[in-house]
Length: 233
Length: 233
Image (cartoon, rainbow over the protein chains, first blue to last red):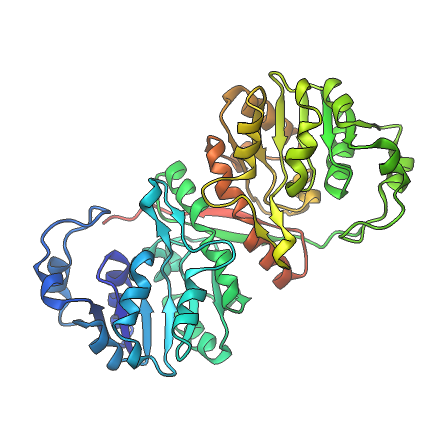
């Protein structure tokens, strides 16, 4: 498939190279191609600048503006930082008609210090905000509850663990589940929570994700839902 | 130990009878003893009125006012509904000096319909609010992320799964961990997230708990944190 990955950070890099490896035609979207390639500093997480990575991977993925990347694709992965997602997506919204936006970002708000809070939260979510803002697109929220290396390679943890899916369009969710399967996700580990309002629930996993990361000092962990017999009351 | 359980709902019932079975001297606290015993209707979850349960269990646990129950106890379990917790605890706050409040409730807000949202949330939590309001007490947030039958009997699910602990006082957390151990929690499954601000993270598990309950139609499930090897980047 033709897939645009919005966002040039570590998440966008890992997602795009994995999709390209699976045979998809992958474009990476950014605001300003020249500026993105000219950046030399490390990002806020200490990763090397995008240009270094792109130099090694430009045979597999091609960098375009958001608008161009969306025009060239059937599916858009939103891997931008949550606080900037809406603005990034608006650059390309004349190319969203009937397309799937796979929203894997989280609305982390660092304005009140670390650890970040969420905005929007509780009675709204970034997933819903994106769906409301771009009603012509089919938004599927998924993969936002784990480290990006685990998103594309769940077998990195030997034990079963779960990924959640939220979205209003069943057909779009089915296509996204196919992509999840191609990443290595077993069908039984994919939990469809329901419509896009359930994105509130998965985005609110971020606060404990961050606290667990601080406690474990290792980003390679995930949530597994374990189930027992229903109680006889 | 002498333990007060605040709240006469299903959670208070299950917690108090389990603590009594372990040999603790358990009092149940309520606002108005006569009114609580006079109630005849089912609660919002369809459970029978407290009086029926109390008639069967009054040899094991005794019903008092919040104030009396706190005065008689070293540890207070807050099992009231989250939106009423502060008000309930205020009835007894001249008896909190140096005592441990084990807060297992969640600030579920049904005012905007179902599923409930949380209030407070995000940059605050009920656990923190209780600690701020009663600085003379040592608040430990725990057990709030699962069904009450699982709280007191983790072995009801054969597989390992986790319980989280948040609180500012190490001594208080150690005592609460002892109680968790007596309920059947293995030390390795108890995750101490840090100070009471980490209660924000565990309370924000409720939205996905509720969505998973709706998807599974079974309250006997829990979160297990599965961990892989740290990535070599």
